[in-house]
Length: 286
Image (tube, rainbow, N blue to C red; front, side, top):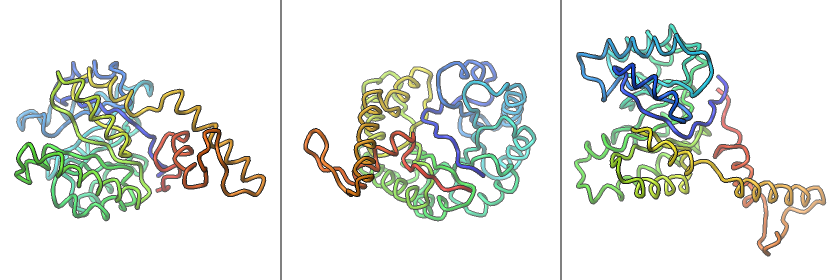
C-alpha cells in the first residue's frame, strides 16, 4: 500500500457512545480514534463494534480520518472482520497491546491492504520487538501506550519519565530504521492541566514524534499547535532549502547562511522534512 498520510492529533472516543463519536468529528482533530478496547466494557463490545461500522458506513469522505482501535484475541478477530466490510472510509486500524507478529499477520490478512495498521506498543515485550513490528510490511506507524506499559513494569509514578524516555528513544530509533512515519505519543490523563500538557506535547514534538492522542476535545488544539510547524518555521525552512539548492547548483556542498551558520546536507535535511510535513520525507512504500 502507499504511505499513510501524516496525522498529528487523534481524538479517542469510546465506541459504545455513538453520541460522542458524532461530536468528535467536529472537534478539529486530524483523526478520530474509535476505541473498541479499554474504554468499552466487555458487555458493550458488540454494540461498540456496530457503532464503529455504522459510523464508517455513514461517512461522506470529508472531515477527519476515522481510525478504530481493535481488541486482542477472539473479540479482536470479530472487530477486524466487521471493519473489513466498511474499509472504503476506514482511515486505519490501531492494534491494542500489539507485541505478537503472528497476530499482526492475522489482522493484516483480514484488513484490506490499502488500510494502514498501527501497533499500539503497551508492553515490555512490545518494546523488545519494536524492530520486527516496525519492519512489518503493513505497519505505517506505531502508537505508544504509556499507561499500560508503566503498569506492567510496576513503576512508581516518579520513575515514569525516566522509563518512558527509554521507550520514546527505542520507538523513534525503530521507526526511523524501518523508514515508517514517526510514532504517536501517549495520552495525557490530567485533563485540567493544559499547561503541563502543552509542555509535554512540545517535548514530544522536539523529540521527533509525529503527534499524540487526545482523550478530550479540549486537548486537540494543544496537540495541533505543538506538532504543526508555524508559518515562520516553514518560511525559514523554505529559505534554507532554497539557499542550499542554489549552492548545489554552483557545485558547492556547503554554504553559510545569513547568520553565519554552515549549512550542508545534514543540516538542511530537517528543513526538507519539515516542508514535506513528516519526519522521513520519503517513507517506505508498502
